[in-house]
Length: 115
Image (tube, rainbow, N blue to C red; front, side, top):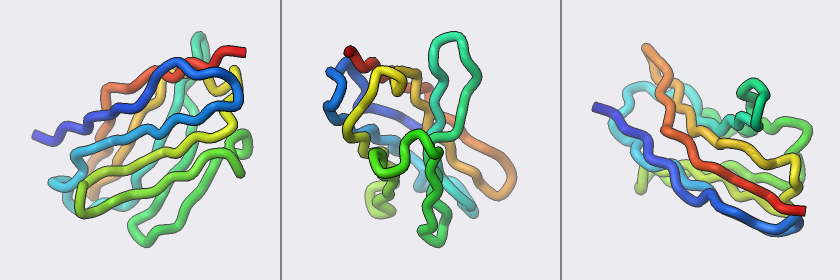
């Protein structure tokens, strides 16, 4: 049973940094891409960043230049480094892994940015 476990969320002041981690993708077959999504209060879930199996990255315009997605295959962990956080970054953040046959999601970690 695949289980993606996220960590690293919390409360931070505007301008601060956090690093989110998502562990557990090592047993997923045929990974196409991994990514982070977020769901602000009262809004739909949205893409934040993705990284393909080949290492190509993609970012939402709102986070370009501030967030960096990366992975450590040896630790089966994907990261999201978030710098210069803004109050509008407040959301539940979810890890996603696209395997050959299905998507996998983590349980989410809350990020709250105070002004």
